[in-house]
Image 1 (cartoon, rainbow, N blue to C red):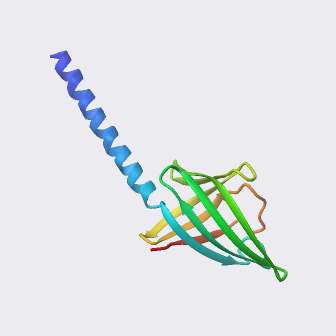
Image 2 (cartoon, rainbow, N blue to C red):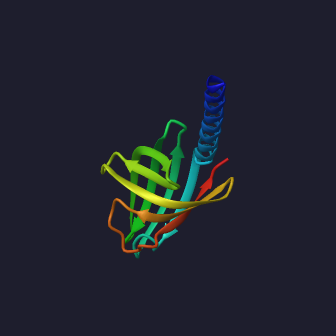
Image 3 (spheres, helix red, strand yellow):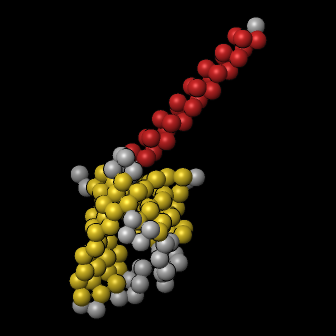
Length: 136
């Protein structure tokens, strides 16, 4: 009787664990793909940024920025790792070895809104937020 009960409890735990892993992967898959975004005067007054971000299933990303500030155009390529933990989105950047952490809201299949929770760089706007739009 005890062995049967232990077996049933183990099966239930395994089933719940598998369901949690599937849900975790399903949510993470919503972030995978190519995304674009832009913002002006949001991170810093006078700075306009446009980006293309490729997030991969393995947790890696490549981020290509084009910035315009004081009539000067710059292009920056950053690589790193991304993941979701405790309901927050993390981006670890290899370039500066710092992480940006965001609250996020999945608006629909093609739009995710991010709001700064803890940034790896100093920003004037503590309410920094943006929307990524998925490319087809």
